[in-house]
Amino acid sequence: MNDGGRVWLEIDMGLLKDNFRKIQAAVKPCSVLAVLKANAYGLGVLPIATALREAGAAGFGVAELNEALSLTRLGMPVQILGSMIPSEIPAAVEHGVIMPVGDLAIAEMISREALKQNRVAECHFIIDTGMGRLGALVAEAFTMISAAVKLPGLKCSGIYSHFPVANRQDLDYTLRQIERFRELLGQLSAAGIDFECVHIANSDAINNFPASFSRPFNRVRTGINLYGAFDPEGQRAMNLTPVLSLKTRLVAKRMLPAGSNIGYGCTYTLQEDMLVGTIAAGYADGLPLNLSNRGYVLIHGCLCPVIGRISMDYSTVALTNVPGAMIGDEVICIGGDGARAITVDTMAQIKGTHAYDVCCSFGSRVERRYIN
Image 1 (cartoon, rainbow, N blue to C red):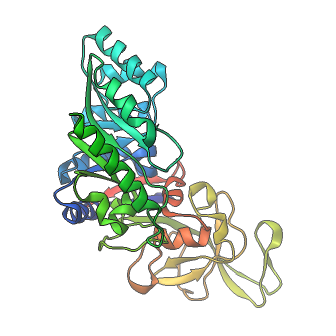
Image 2 (cartoon, helix red, strand yellow; image 1 turned 45 degrees about the horizontal axis):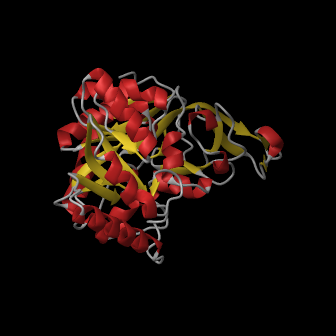
């Protein structure tokens, strides 16, 4: 570990595994698919996946083929949850990736490629029960699936759907989606078509809708909850622990006179002489621009307000609460303990977004460090 780094993320693997096991216990007897899209939400997919394999994940969910291929070396089921482009099918079949099927044309392409390679291609049907993004419309799915399961070279092992508003308990929309999906499953079962894996619950649904991980469902998908982060609107049914800390260093410390303007746009003017520090992190490292004149960092456990506009590489903070701070001292941008902790959820609220966006915004020069 390079303790002299300028900006780094600490990811506590012990807490990550603990969070996974809490989720697994909450949804038993369902199995848990760990969703690791976008390089595990920017945190580093191979170390995260390895830890979750050790914790008992049933497999990994990703958005597209390149993400899937990066994980096949771990010897776990890897499932594309989004869509397939025809040119991606040969590699997916060759490497045993579980593919989504949302229409008969894709099923036929996968079947032809499987026969060409003399392999069996595994797939899950993706059903649009109300997301409006991908998959077979629920009203048309029975006909499509009935035809697709007859195609040679296919192992149609699963079926799934997705929620757009499972963070909102006060809406009946999600319950109607569950009911539509159950009706489809009943139709299929009556026709002798059943599946090993049936899943609809995402992280929000695990917290808000127990019906989404009750029979006939036997699997859930979780991503953001693994890191102890939640949607700001939903309830937090599980006692999960934040696993991320974003840290940098104090690189300058100066006493500036009253009347000094701070940063681009001169958005902050000192009303009195002030001890001011500059930290080696900016919006290129994942600090939201909305932290400007609003957010805080922690130095020696003390809250230090961000003053002036966040810039690409540096940010300025008031050192009034920590006059003894020294150049090179650690600065916590996300993390800390107790009431002063700055969480991913806190950062998301200041940014006016959600935790997914915050996690995916940490820049490429931010070193990922895996602890515990």
